[in-house]
Image (cartoon, rainbow, N blue to C red; front, side, top):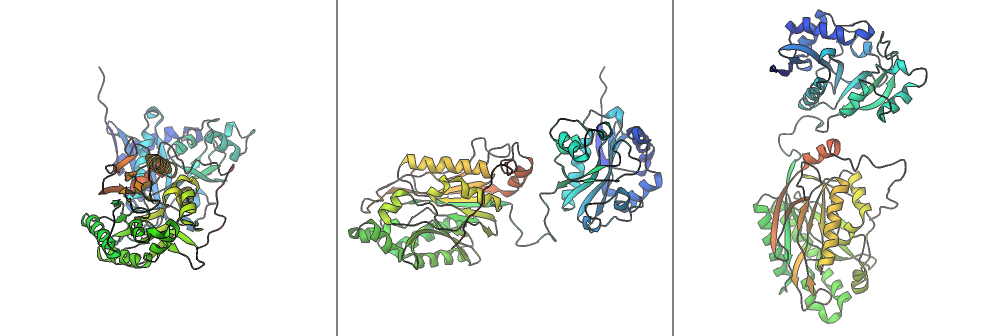
Length: 512
């Protein structure tokens, strides 16, 4: 008959010492059965009880993970085990330190194969996160290195372990648990004949670490609410009428406590009707004169309705007389940033004579780091990747498309950008017809919020989407903490796994 088994991970107690000693002697039989004396364990439990974790099978301790908190800069990256433990006195423990330092981890040989060490490592990671420490660092033994020392240097041995050509019971396990090697240490642990006293300095980074004390107000947001405006193209009697419609939508998304409001590209095109007799290019230049006034109202609404607004885009006449397609980010604190569309479509060039911008940058907001690409821009993957290298969380894409073909290019490329750059992508466009405005006759749109493709996200990448070709708002929440987890623990790592040794991407010029 199969017997019940009880496996538990909890803090160590001093009465566990006899079992701890037996497990250590068995674990380290290859280097003489070294073990901690009872007074040492007692000292650890006095100075840092939370850092001493045991794993128990049927209420008997069979393994443990022992730790200190240190300031790693006090020792540098080239140190010995004696130095980091204060010559085994643990005087180096510093409650105000920045690093959880693993000084020991072991599992009794009779209980290996049950993945109990993984439970200890997971408990350490949880402890590191809860204490808001920057990382876990440890000196990792290389138990199998003595078998290869005549053929391989420590660096060569580590590389072969990394590429699964050699199995090392310690290093292979550590790498499979998201630790990476910082450097090779010499003379790390006296008497470690299996490792020939070599060790790897390994590190696991706490992606949730926040510098300084936790803010009680104005803390960075993790769950961010997006309000997308699917704008109906219609004729307006005046600029004031258009501004009234803008305020209506800002008010609507702000009522739902949205952190961002996104308007479409060239949503103000109906104002061209007044100048239709002048031809498309001159009509676009004429409505550019309204851009400063409309922008001022957007800035006012961002403050008064307490929402960050991506203003879609509007035409702007540059000091040299050229015309650009500009989106503005009106922060709710009153400040304004701008992005000029970089890739101008053939029709924008031929019909309106627009020119492209020359600046690639992300913007810091109170609700994450964002990027803006206007319509055609999203069909070029390079800029979004440059944004990702600058830490972008959300990519906003105001667009204007007349046919379903054009819309599908924007949609499909936006979904690809979300996967490639492990970020959220929000797109918003205009719908309806403008029969009295040249070159703006028909519009097609379905605004949406797209996600990366992994277990924490929708299987079809669609967080939310609007009804096609219908004026409406779309409200959706996105969780920025899921992006942090994806970057480190996703099924694939599209940012980390790039072959920088083979290719690179850089900004050649970045001028306003």
